[in-house]
Amino acid sequence: MTNEWAIEAHGLVKDFGEQRAVDHVDLNVAPGIVYGVLGPNGAGKTTTIRMLATLLGIDEGEARIFGHDVVKDAHRVRQLIGVTGQYASVDETLTARENLDIFCRLQGLTGKAIRAKGDELLESFGLTEAANKPLSKFSGGMRRRLDLAASLIARPPLIFLDEPTTGLDPRTRSQMWDTIRELVSAGSTVLLTTQYLDEADQLADRIAVIDTGRVVAEGTADELKALVGTSALQVTLAETADADEASKLIASITGGEATLSPESRRVNAPLSDTGVVTDVLVALRERGIAVTELSLQKPSLDEVFLTITGHTAEPTTDSDTEESAA
Amino acid sequence: MSVVTTAAVAPGFDRDLPRHVSLRQTWRDSMIMARRSLVKMRRTPEQLIDVTLQPIIFTVMFTYIFGGAIAGDVQSYLPLFIPGILVQTVLTGASAAGTNLREDMDKGVFDRFKSLPIARIAPLSGALTGDLVRYLIAGVITFVMAFVMGYRPEGGLFGVTMTMLLVMACAWALSWIFALVGVSMKSARGVQGIAFLILFPLTFLSSAFVPTETMPGWLQAFVKVNPVTHIISAARDLCNYGTFGTDGWLALGGAALVIAIFAPLTVRKYRTHT
Image (tube, rainbow over all chains, first blue to last red; front, side):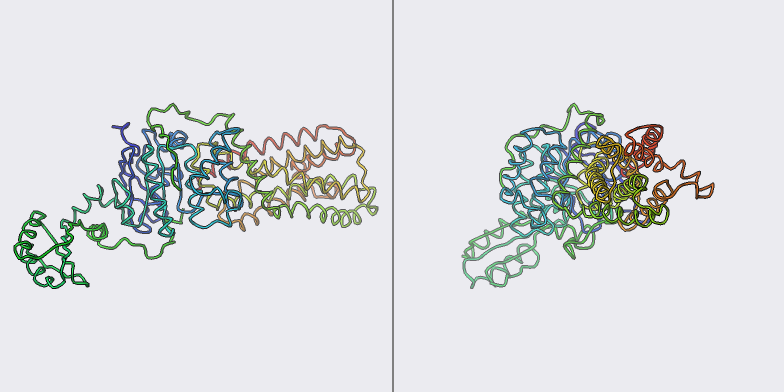
């Protein structure tokens, strides 16, 4: 079994003084996927990533990266990973090119390959024009891109991304998502932490929900949503006039409540058995009520998180640091 | 940021990976890190202010304060003073190593250094090696000031060059003491305080300014084992006579001993310190 997982962690524990930041975390991450670690600020996400990335000692438990122990074989592990932290780990006083130049050299590149790699990365991350500006003139998004570029020099098969989109504007965020998808399609495995439920939902093939240092749920987004149990039916009507009749009809078939959306053309109804959708459609047709759109939605991860942990996951303040005690 | 790269990433399993960093790579990584220091100096030249102004002020100040009091005739005592002031000035420059390291380590870039498959010592040894440029600047300015004040070293250009090399090598060695303070303490301010407490006894409890015979016996005992005393004596020999003797060897031996003790301690502290 040891040689199957990109990441394999058993019973990871980390204490900061009296406080237990990570409390017996188990993770198994298959190669070639995006694995999301989802949790609120202070849940232990960053600490877990730092332990897996050889940046922080492990108090209890053990972890392997592609079969190599992160403590005993740290040098080998470091040859297989790329790490992009929550705060840009690049040199503020240097330019983007100077940064990449140093990191390329440290990764063993020599001669013309240094310049070529730098050009390639600057180009693919849209930083060519800013290449010779000092980082103090960079926006948060540009810094984050350079940081990720620096992590990709050695084409690592495993990439750790600690809250890669926190603090980014929506456009930059979706660019980052595209980049992450490209990395995986090229064959890398990505472990990312996030506080955003939609990010985990959109990107991650599997998700571990982490709260107060423990993994409280693990599975695909669908599996996690299934934990909450119900789906929701949404019917958009052609005529507003049908709204009342349709909602009463739907409620009687689904056996629950049906709510009208503010513009009164959309009926929402929770569903425990998805099989009744056909009955609803047949009944609507018999009454001559025209439908323009119909959808069956699983509950959002927000509801999942709330159900599992008893509180919401959305961050209170975006830039809050997690476990800065390190 | 489209098209990260189209080529496939090699799988992480079954790679033939070295388990340890080789000596060759350690050297290479350290040199790359030293290069980084130099690029940083070029980008932020203000960090060279101390090593530029200090030798000007120290040379004039110490020569006239101590020279007048001890020797009466400043000119004839320049050969005695200048090597002492040189060593003190360069070591003062070295004492900033801890503070600089601490400030650097507090920035995110050190996280990346830690996650890279490079020698653990490289970010430290590289930074200290880059500092050699600072020592060179401090040394050259000290000699220029001395020349302006009338100092004509008998050892000639050869003696002066050899003095510079010796002092720079010893400063590099002693800077590991300050590096240890830098990686051990939490704040740059704290590092600076401790660095001063180390620097002062090290430079003043030496033969730099006053004849050691005037000191009480227990102090003389310390002055004798203080590596700085031997560095100064060796610098005097080289500057004034162009010779390299016992003091030179003792200075180099002391420097090697300091590296042997403090470099491993510093690396260990750096590894365990999050």
